[in-house]
Amino acid sequence: MGEETPADAGTPIVPLEIEILTLFPGMFTGPLSESIPGRVQSRGLAAIRVHDLRQWGLGRHKTVDDYTYGGGAGMVLRPEVVAGALAALRRSDSTVILPDPGGEVFGQARAHDLSGRRHLIILCPRYEGVDERIRSTVDLELSIGDYVLSGGEIPAMVFVDAILRLLPGAIDAASTTEESFTAGLLEYPQYTRPPEFNGMTVPAVLTSGHHEAVRKWRLKEALRRTAARRPELLAGRPMSKEEARLLAEVGSEEAAPREDEVGVEVDQ
Ligand code: ADE
Image (cartoon, rainbow, N blue to C red; front, side, top):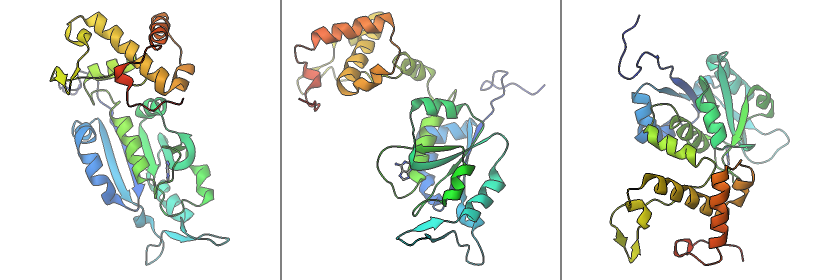
């Protein structure tokens, strides 16, 4: 039997392994070494390896890209380069991800799903993208939104950050529990000291010390904000009896404008 440490308490931690394939490895240094991503790695919850795609480049000049057939601006990553990198890194338990504006829109459910996998390979295209024949060899194409970035590096950082904070032990367990009670809703309002700022006060319930009242208030405010700003999120989400009741209360209160909604643009 191996020695137990307080961190594993008998259950060995199987770290999530992530390989990032990029032509710009330096872009990842800061974002992945600071804050939660840095802590997750130093605690051994995840191992992230950034690989320079050029090491699989072709010929003496390590060429990685070429002109697009049919003409037009921009260069395309050559399929042999990508195939070489994938052949070196892919395992039977790998999930290969291609950031692409035409992919599935990345959301919290997908982040949860990916945080439970063993080995992720994120292939970051640059230039005009990858040769079309590479698409069939990836498992998942993911977009971070309807805009075009100059490469897959920033989307890859978004995926990794969202995934790492979900690993058990990555952040304070209370934060993830709190998130799950309002899962699928926008965040409820948060306040810190001072109790009065620019004439605005903190809602009295938050300083009452009454935990159940605080929980209800937060749930109700999360529902209020979601209904006002992102009503489509409510439509696709099952609702408990308590939530339905709180939402009905919100509806009847909304006839009178609230101070804390000032500044939010709403369609007239
Ligand atoms: N590559 C370029 N733009 C992107 C986007 N919006 N999402 C994912 N990958 C991309």
